[in-house]
View (cartoon, one colour):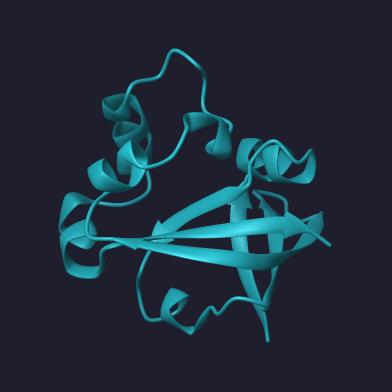
Amino acid sequence: MNHSMKLFEQSFANIKSGKKTIEVRLYDEKRQQVQIGDTITFTKLPDKDDTITVEVIGLSRFSNFRDFFSSFDKSKFAHPENWSVEDQIQAQRDVYSEEEEKRYGVIGIHIKLT
């Protein structure tokens, strides 16, 4: 199955270059449909003028961002080396609220370029 998701420019570029190998999302109804072996077509925001397709090679579910980011090296997300877990969580707060995090939990989608 192919899924469609949108990404901001920097995350898009990091996946396209192979630097980012785990995409973090809320484990909402849409992400609950994602299975290992599926593909995801990411569309770059804001212009929606470029896409890349990746294969899902693993899934890691957590109840919160703290446990999630504490479990993986920050290089998997192409985060700066000097970022703390707090910095990583704060970056997610630009997209997801604490209430959404508590409601859905977190999914790490392990990907490889196709």
